[in-house]
Length: 324
Image (cartoon, rainbow, N blue to C red; front, side, top):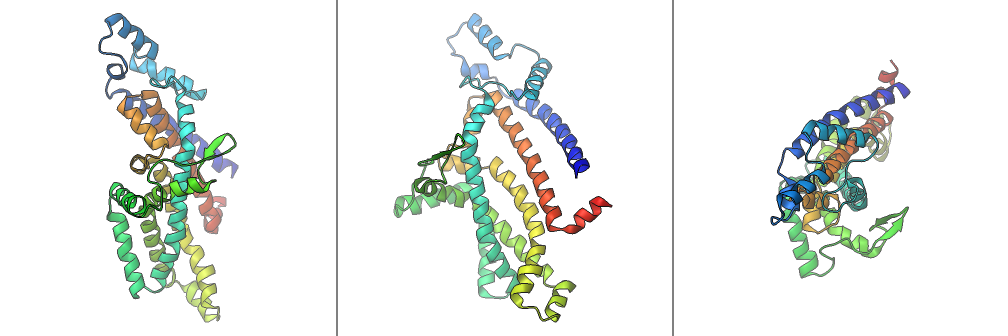
């Protein structure tokens, strides 16, 4: 395990280095923040002072070396707009995005697994066909349109839920969380459901395919021949085996949910990292954009490692192969 973790850490460091080069060059090659941040009425002397203060007067390679040196020390630069550390701004918005993403994945598992099990165990029933048709809608409907329809129905027409914002929050370990208050949960309900719709459809289809495949396996037939009850066969033998692909894909989807929650956060005015990155792109706040993208890369690396470890727990053959 120690050798495996060391190898993964080396791979992670290499990936972070390569991605830092790609992200830095890509972001710094787009637009000129000086044109947005500095008044058009400023003279050349003021523009020169501003460019020097932002560090934009140096060659690109020298800017990258400065960025890399500071990044190793945990400093990804200061925001051009807010004049605060970029990581601090992201850290302030991260709880909102993280709780929204985890709520969406919780809904995806809570709703998707039972529906997928039912569709896999009774594939020819009317309910199973309706579930699969609904999953197609979940894949097809645009996220922004679903969000607007949710607001129209549950906020405007029925008045059951608030349409925008994060609501009342409570503090734990210096961070503000919405899920700890009823008002926060009410504000989270629609954006979490909107973000979870695609994931629910994905989990349904993964679970159904896994059940249909596993039910034909010899060990399931042998378990039934031993006289085990249907609930035990499904709960122990079938369910554990279908969890392997579900855990793998769900873990990776968690990363994409966090990274690409921009549309949902924009529709519901949810003050998370997605809203921050949109605002930063509009004003070309380069340090915040770079810090956000590097944070997402690091998050995907961590999630991949956790998924691999969970995979080895669910499938003992992975551990046997690693020992061999």
